[in-house]
Length: 485
Image (cartoon, rainbow, N blue to C red):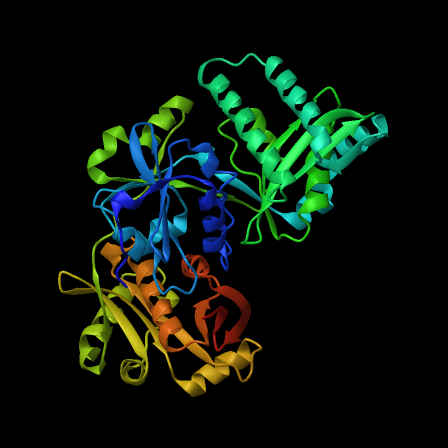
């Protein structure tokens, strides 16, 4: 599908973007905050966006360079994120990218990440229950706060609270000795908080106010995204009340987010105290963010300068992906494919991690299944297949506890030794998954992997597969992973 991209059609971030973002997020499970209008986009005073029909583009200048968000693609459109990115001008720089986007992006980029950019994502159930030994200190802090402040009360924001919030913000800022950029950032936050308060009064955000003896002691603001993830973007309290932050964070989540699987509490900005606090709640995972800049621009990389600002080591975490063509293989390619699989299997450190097809099985997949091959300069560099053998598919369905379901094996994943770690396999696998969605849906793809083959298990999970069972088969133990398409 051709994507219409007109650089002149971009418009400044506005209230229309708010609803547009939510519509594009429908049906997704993304846990990041960078597509939230209030939690993220509103911070950019000169951001721009373009609704290209099935793709939403966003961009903003940062540190003198124009960066794009990873394109947001509407669910069910048939457009891939890689296709949307490829429609942008050559040399486009990207920021706020997840590992998934990095793995799917075409080559020619230096790829950077920084620990300070990672967002903290928590299991809501754990954050609210605070059960187990590791949360013992948190429970004690909350109990102490309630014991010392029996009149403490959390209530939903009303217009009557606004004068107290304004005074609370003013006193909080006055009590701190900001300098330079930190002071400007704090002042900017105060302006944005006013917008959030109005949005909360309209019911677009959730905001609770904590009072002790009727006096304002804290405020928390958050949002529930269409993805089902909650975002807590603002939390401020009067530290004269011992344990107030522990109580505020817990009570706010318990009152508003129990219907969400995850709570995203955003990044720590490299602040040691904030990092320690966020880690003390034991996040389910840190959602790392990446910057992609054309390889020729290494010296002016925004990420590199940020690293110097925080005096920490910058990680170069990837290399440009090789360009390659993809085509469907047929039985006429049997000799080339068998030679490739046998040769590359010999180069594996653990050859048991790839149990090669028998000649009969490979002929069957090439004739009755669908095997894809990636080619670079005429050389086969990777393979991946969907085996459509119905009898075998039925046995996979039974093993996975879905007897009678429509199952196909996702198999034949092999990459040339000199091409590993360059995004070839993950991109080819995504092409095969996209094919299955177009041609075989509804069905379940099932991958069968040696139970201790951690690299393959992790790669499949990154593609969306989930392990459902591990079973012995002869002298081997196999893990069965499935993906419904």
